Length: 289
Image (cartoon, rainbow, N blue to C red; front, side, top):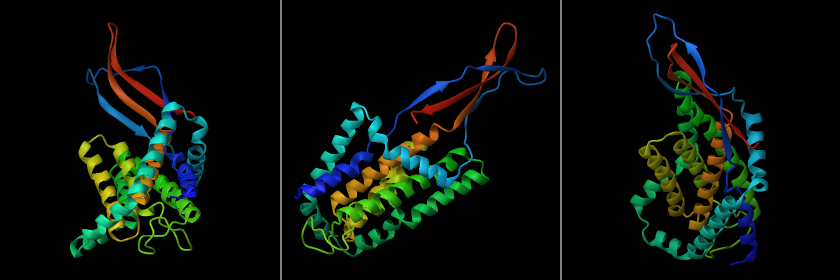
């Protein structure tokens, strides 16, 4: 294995740690309840999103992510090291895993791969569009946050980071060469763009929903996208793993950044010897921007 690809791999994985945020709660502000109202009112916290403007938001987020290593601490560097080791280990196994995929390939597997692969491309944008419509017309703040965060994550991860690395590293696809790490014109194998896109969206969905079933479904579909690209002869296992790490890292980073800009409001009961009422609790997370 050549030294050059490992150096470029290290640059790639500089996105594996996310910026940390700190939460600053504001004091409770008691509000009196009219005599005719109920004695106690309780409602879940709501997300109040700022006006979303794609291109300014994209610029801010991309800048914050690109400069993240300047703010890393020990745990962040540990994540970076694990990512490098994982992708490096996958590089060593690429030949064996490639042969295993070829041995188990058949017509049924090929058709499944053909149907799953678009979830790392146009289908994922369709899913984000559905989340946006649900957020707008059903007044679902979580769905709208998924649409906003997923779009920005996709554009940064699969639209900027992945194409730059593909052009820089120039690894040829399995369908183009019999060598495990051949570089040349038209080499766009490393990392997998479809997998990057799928995991960017999956990580955003998983971050916004607490249900383990939703998390399993999101990451399960993303994982199938990576396997489908290996089945189609488009990528090696290390390409897929690198794409997954990029997508997850950037998806989580974008969610944390955007959460720091969203105001959370909750209504809770308030009682005292002299008055009854409710209290509004405001929490604004201020990131280290």
